[in-house]
Length: 235
Image (cartoon, rainbow, N blue to C red; front, side, top):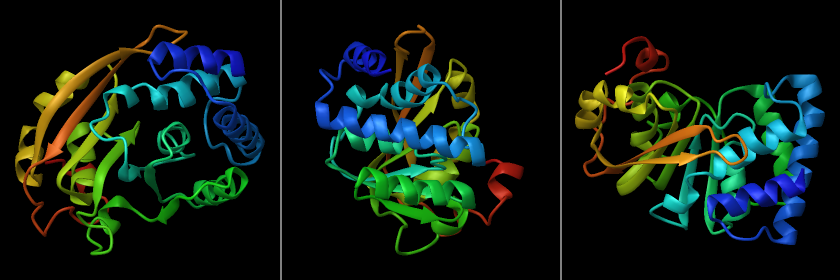
């Protein structure tokens, strides 16, 4: 497992995996497999699958990130992806994991203790917390992976970003099609497309695409809409 992880991180262009960070990934893998037997946190159960499709997939766009420090929010973090791998490789991020599922919340709090890492677990829905003055327009970076179609994802994410902040959406080869349907959402919510990057997942050679959005204007106060509406009636 660790040889695969080291190889993949080198292929991504992130250099050599340091021993202390390797240890954190080992703990993370062990805890994820253990909890997955009880709570079905992820469809991937084998070491190889978790390393490739969670650890490496989470890290793939890191060389392209416009910032390597600051307040980072992971929208719909699930079992901690991509936020925790990003934090392990780049401890300068001040990490906040947003998740609504109770079982996943328990896992995130457990893994925080096991890894002895400093990050916040935010329990709730993006539509609700995005209206909370404590979190609204407070973050420099937002990331989301395998959460929702792009117009919905923009409404979940952009309210959390301060003006000048960046949103990175992890997407597959249909990203450009989703972008065609997202112009209205970007215009309303204050975002502008900064870049689209493409990368190849190590080991498997699968194609991944990443959207980089910069927040250029404030998000109107009536967004995000109440819970459930963005997914039912996308902008």
